[in-house]
Image (cartoon, rainbow, N blue to C red; front, side, top):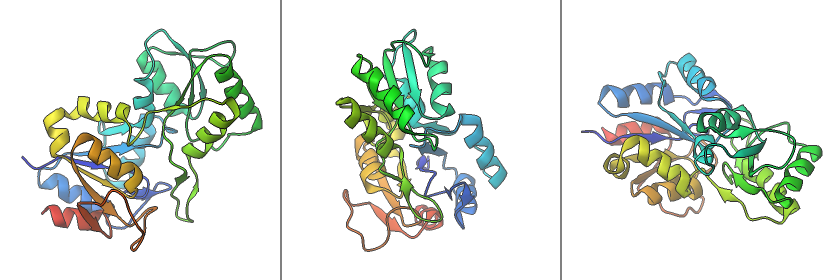
Length: 251
């Protein structure tokens, strides 16, 4: 059976939801040849339906094939616990599905931080004060930047760093390349399929390390943060221009 392709979204399939040239055709080609394509993203901001519908509008069916760092972060809480969210609606959705109460006021069991453009000083003060009061600090990811068509902008990891510094806490991080996301992907695919997969991403420090964490191959593309000639660690099993070239190599 052809290996599953685990595909990052930002910097691989799209930039700010504008499709990267050739990505739609590459995914169609992979699926036509029997590869399952699962999208594994560290962006915790959108709800699942938003991601699925955005991919559908591009011509990529994705129902049930999107896994996010918000879902991975939810695994770090237990049903019945409570959380304050310094992030987007995707985190709220994932926590609700897990049976975690989301609230703004009072003491909570955890503060969950993710990428959101509304982050401000008041949000920093509220999140850090809840952590100092005893809440666990959980980050959906620690990516310093987020790729856009106009270049990188501060990512969820930059927001998490601010909350961690203000509260004096060391966060638990859920997304790629960390254990909660590895557990999520392994649960969905099964251990053997996960180990046989190919992880396609634009960040060796997240996508590459994640591939090593689940024991699969790593294909690096140059359509996002990493550009040709940059030093990378870990070394990819395949380094090519874009997702279209990955599909051609797997053929």
